[in-house]
Image 1 (spheres, helix red, strand yellow):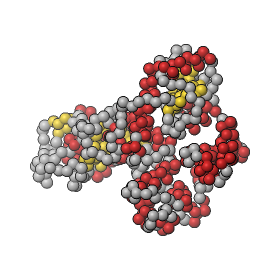
Image 2 (image 1 turned 30 degrees about the horizontal axis):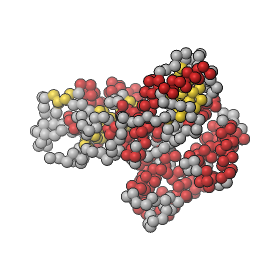
Image 3 (image 1 turned 30 degrees about the vertical axis):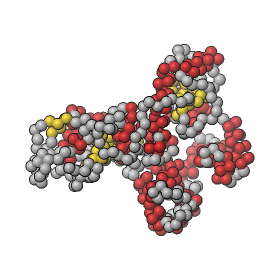
Image 4 (image 1 turned 60 degrees about the vertical axis):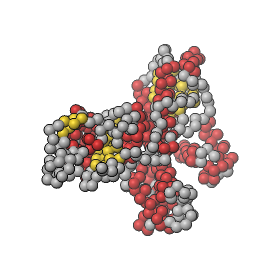
Amino acid sequence: MRDPSTRLCGSAIEKRVGLPVVGQIPVGDIGVSKAWLKCYEPLDRPMLDDAVRVLAASGIEPDQTPHPEASLGLVLLCDVSAGLIDWLERATRHATVLALVVTETGLAVDETWQLMSAGAADVIVWQRVPPTADDISARIDRVHEVSAVMRSPALQRQVVGSSAPWLSTMRDLVEVGAFTDASVLIEGESGTGKELLAQLVHELDLRRQKGDFVILDCAAITQELSGSEFFGHERGAFTGAVNARDGAFALANGGTLFLDEVGELPLTLQAQLLRVVQEHQYKRVGSNTWQHTEFRLVCATNRDLLAGVADGRFRGDLYHRIAGWVCRVPPLRERPEDILPLTTHFLSQLNHAREPVMVDRAVQEYLLTRDYPGNVRDLRQLVTRMWYRHAGPGAITPGDIPKTDRPGEHAARVGWQDDHFERAIRHALDLGAGLKEVSRAAAETAIRIALELEEDNVHRAAVRLGLTDRAVQLRRASGRQLH
């Protein structure tokens, strides 16, 4: 009997059982903890009392303490202001925030989308009649369930990153994987981790104990054997078919079929795939018997499939079948905060979980300023090359970087003042900010980020910034007063 955990010889199909990707991720039956509540704007007393009463019935009490990382919060407001938008953008970097708008006049549609663009998970308007406690509780329950899955050690060991773009992607994947059976289209550049996220969707699926995760690499399918890859074949169906064989549709029955690089499928195969997705039936090559199959379809592509639909390279009806939920995976350049955590993660894997491997500061700066055209895969390969050059128990040092990877003279001179820094300054000046405003904002941002990196430890943040503890405390206090 064939070992289902190995790739089939000469085939684009891979069937995996008992994936070690994220293990048993908890879904459902998760206790609800309290959320913090911030009243951002002065509210009419009667309306505020009504709001607090409804929230109290949901187990939410006013709490003016700073929001903890990776938590759930609610903000009560009556008006959308620039200060509120700025606060919301900062708060939602690590917390999930529901915006509760208490108003008698309603909220303009553009203001609703302002709040959503600033990072609000949802906007609930309380106009005359507030929502019920059950309504609020249900929303809070869902956020806590998603957050609990994201915080699970099994998931965090494999899916590394804490940047806002990455966390947003992960929340979307957790929600669609755990709470729906929709087909998922994962879009992203090569090397961004699309297959890993497809495996995550499979692990979160409530049917994951019944079926397997089956991979079909669409870029590796040959035209001559494409029918067999998808449908399987009977013995003697064509020259070389000495035995009957299951195809991807049979192997994925009851589980998940992952079509990697689905944009590479020729139009004839797209039509055949559409028929199976719609009717859940197929015939093996060389057979007249209809077979039934049920699977969750997850596809990945580094192409713009909608552009392919427009120019006729990809079927529109198939696109709308596979894109029940579209997830865009951010490239590494959009999540630079994750470069060092990913480096630590890869080194831990290479070191087989022994003592943590430190990285010299010069190497850290090099990693943060380097381009990664191959995204996370590119970073992993670089870390691997450095690891195999490294000797001894000490830190990874500049000599561990292969000569072909070392920065040139220009890169070494530019350092942290790269194009990203210049674009940020240019953007501020274009918006009318003066030198004092830019300097103050840069200082406040540096202090806030240093405190985040050092888990709110003032002394370590001061060392990182080259300031005294007292200076950091005073500047943090003055920054809060300004907001």
